[in-house]
Amino acid sequence: MDLFPEPLPRESFERGPEPGAPLADMMRPRTLDDFVGQDKLVAEGTPLREMIEKDQVPSLVFWGPPGSGKTTLARIIAKMTGKRFVTLSAVTSGVKDLRRVFETAKFERRNGRGTILFVDEVHRFNKAQQDAFLPHVEDGTITLIGATTENPSFEVIPPLLSRCRVYVLESLSTDALKTIISRTLEDNADGLGARELELDDDAASAIAELAAGDARYALNLLETTSGLLADGGRITLDFVKKAVQKKALLYDKNREEHYNIISALHKALRGSDVQASLYWLGRMLEGGEDPIYVARRLVRFASEDVGNADPQALVLGMSAMQACKLIGMPECDNALAQLVIYLATAPKSNSTYKAYGAVKKRIRQGTNPPVPLHIRNAPTGLMKDLGYGQDYKYPHEYEEGYVAEEYLPEEMQGEVFYTPSKFGFEKEIKKRMDYWAKLKERGNDEE
Image (cartoon, rainbow, N blue to C red; front, side, top):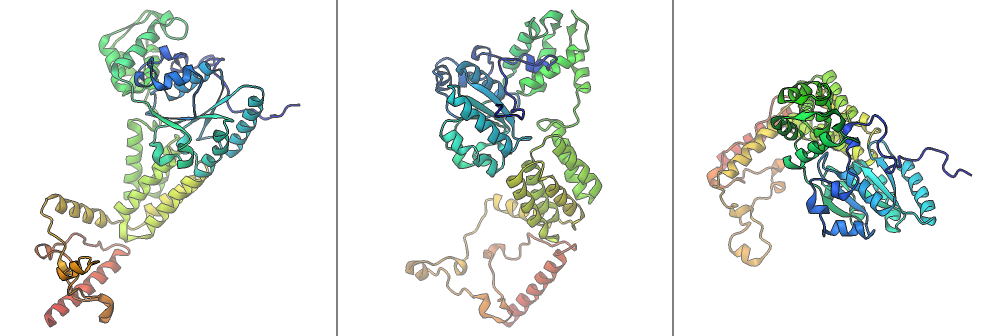
């Protein structure tokens, strides 16, 4: 009887890359000795290497930038320890997929074979999804290896993080990338060796520098560049430049276009263009951007560019971020779209942003007077004897709930940080500030 009639999540290592796979996949290292650029982690004698060689690998979280080798290292661990290797993407998988993996892992375990479950972008799983791992990691049904580009201290729930060891992978150095490029040009089986291409030093340096520590990007660029030449040709800097232009992507969340599109979204929102704002949001989400990252930027926009012109913008922003954390993609896309529409059509004000900027500038000047005695905290008798809190006037005991009082140090009195705009709710704020200013002036005249 087939216990698992539905296709299981991808299980592969021994099969190797599929025919026609990208060069970066073809050249994926299969042993620790071939694994370049992370010597601090896997060199002879390192704790992680010894755990792998002794088949004593606990659940792990690999934290590092794109193309640093997180997936490759997980695959090597599975091969060296003889475990089943199952991969899931937190972007496209849910609790149903996890349950099926766990059931299969239990079955395999009864037959004497362990399972390594590799979860790419594990930070994209919401709390409920991450909770589902706990009993199965705890009882050894699976060895979890999670990969993330985000700080796991913030993105992985503490109960799961406490059951894993975190290893940090660094961006690959220029020399490491050049080594990978060289090997690829010499490899006849999986690389470009059969094409007998030559590579100029400045072209190799350019590819390595453009890759910015990302081996996958370097090999993709090398593959694109080599496609411009006939067999036996020479890869020059000019060919690399042409390949870069040809390789421009619709959206690459880790490179220049990522910042271009978030900038476009921010400016469209500030310009109150609903249609453009929705379009740029879609470009990010459909391109695979982390919705939490988008939500954070929108919350920042709610305070920085809407502010108290519409205080509800920040409330809706936090609600949308909570939705992203609890339900994840694709369900949270409408919550973000709702927020974008609201922000684009909200009255705009950067008064809060400017006000706090002025405060920071004032503080950084280094001349920060002490707190005036009458508004100091006085929890002890000695402090009261020293005048702490003396002559403080309690506003609720006065008519209108307001009293003419100074709360800034004497040498700062009269300084203005916040000036409300004339838009939205800030019109009401201005009325209140003007009213209290008149009460204060009247109170001072009566003293």
